[in-house]
Image (cartoon, rainbow, N blue to C red; front, side, top):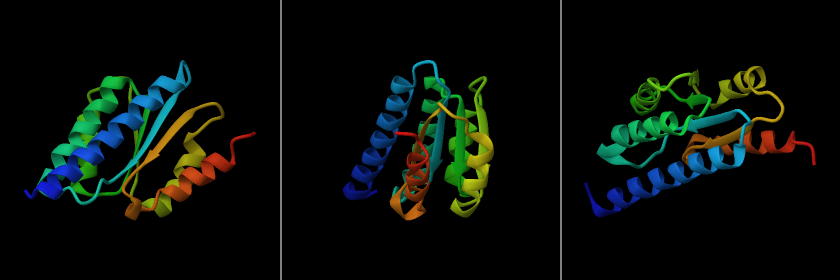
Length: 135
């Protein structure tokens, strides 16, 4: 692995970890929902990096994990988070199927993290959720 890919893997994992930790710290006793898509450009460390994030989801006690995508990396993330109980895991095959799932799943007052590589295209869902929060 090149130094560039190694640095990218560490940066992606660090950003995701900080986001998940922030999610749990600001939530208090409210339900936490992590909507996670693929971290791109990780090379041969991608599957392991996604599994690390999945384990962190479980360790932090996040209530709901929503994975977006059908890659082996996203499967590794969900599988690593799965032993955590009572974690609920939902999946959307792609961004185009995410909004109906979120409309069914989310309730007022929940704290939601939406995170993925920009190329996955999840930022529009974060914007939609933010727009629906009363000022």
